[in-house]
Length: 116
Image (cartoon, rainbow, N blue to C red; front, side, top):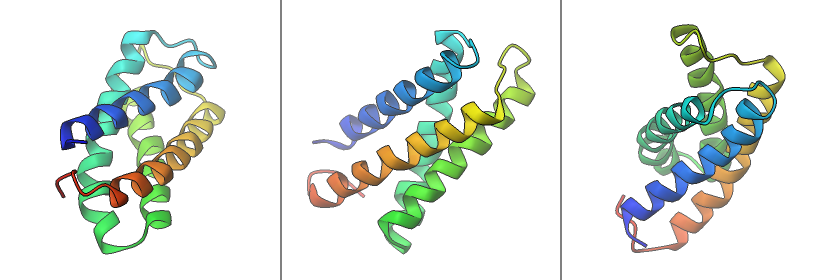
């Protein structure tokens, strides 16, 4: 798997988690969830996969990815008035992201085709 495919996989799983929480619980549009997923996936890759994962272990990186997802979502909701989030949806979103990232990290560490 090439690096761009792993990024696409990260984006898709972030969108699915966002759709399940931010759209179904809070009623945000698919476009808003797509934008949030793009921001979360990009920053999660840059910070979580490239900085935190190599310096620590999978559990720490996954938890950091979940926390980053929650923080990024709250910041976007402050900057974009059309986006509404509740505490419950952000907590569930962060848990889903952390769980998905945990298994994605296992796969990425086992795959030698993904560039660091």
